[in-house]
Amino acid sequence: MPENFCRPFNCALLSSAAFLLAYLLFSSTGAIASLEPGLMVGGASRWCETVSDGMFREPSNALSNIGFMISGLVMFRVLSSETTRKRQAFYGIRKTTALYAAAVVCLGPGSMLMHGTHTDWGRWADNLSMVAFIVFPWLYNLRCMAGWSENRFLGIYAIVVLSYAGTRWFFGDDLGIGLDLFGLSIGLWVISECLHRFWSQAFRLTSGLVGFVVAAAFGFSPLKIAQDPISFWWVVLFWVPAVFAKDAPVTTRIYTPWFFLGVSTYVVAFLIWLNQWSVFLCRPDSWFQPHAVWHVLAAVSTWFFFLFFRTETGAREMP
Image 1: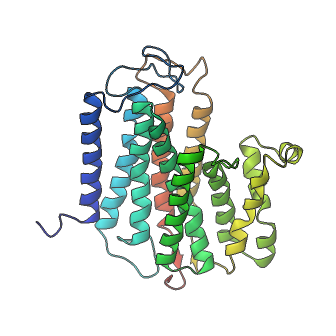
Image 2 (image 1 turned 135 degrees about the vertical axis):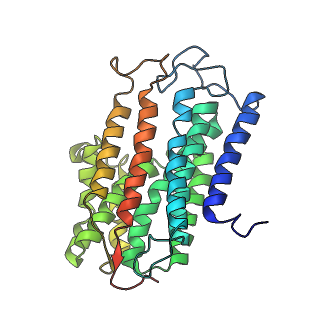
Image 3 (image 1 turned 90 degrees about the horizontal axis):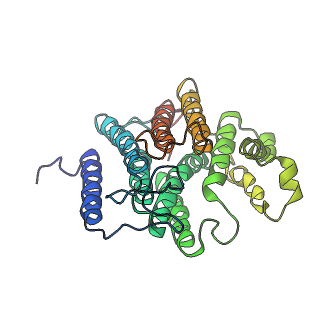
């Protein structure tokens, strides 16, 4: 076997190709196709596209997820072509950089399984891939402020994702406790990013309030939360970053332009997601699907955030 056969980029490329081949093989036999309750072939899916009797229940919405795989593979290619740098953790192949790129690649198969098969396990795979990506940035931020070693960071990441995988499988979307980990993690990313940028002991105590601003942006106003504290119990988790951010980060980042491009691209994608069922956007029989555009733009945002993390420099090398 050639020496470079199992290098990260090659492995990621072969894994992606193997997934697509396996999907096409099993789908062509009808072994993995289903229909969501209340839907029928020829009708509109939950995401507007007409349900097909072919290899993909939603062809455009399924195939657009290749964008995530391309984004992650390009990351692997870039990282594999360079050497690591002592004070720039997102250069070269490391466990951490490979994990980020792999999480982006996996967003593709996860979502494709949901839109392609209409199965319960496909929805589970889709949700798991989303969580596997979104917990990375806020846990990585905590690593920068908590002084975790790379192996400890990876261990904590694995515990969070595997625990979520099991509880989501058995207890459903809210894990049986009314918790949307994906939505919460968006808030935790913003909170931890603010802590990374403006760390102080005083801000640690009040940093959780940033989460209420994020919640309000997604339609959960402080008043709404106050009126139903039992349903919104999870707001106490807004202070999780403060618990672990015991010291100022040893790293600094440049936010312009990549961070703001990543945020703005995601916001545009999310606005399309919110309006995908509108009369203006929803065309069930068209190959141009708003949900597919959401996938493509979200994939682009993962690339921008990758470039943002690559601006990070450290006063010293992280453990």
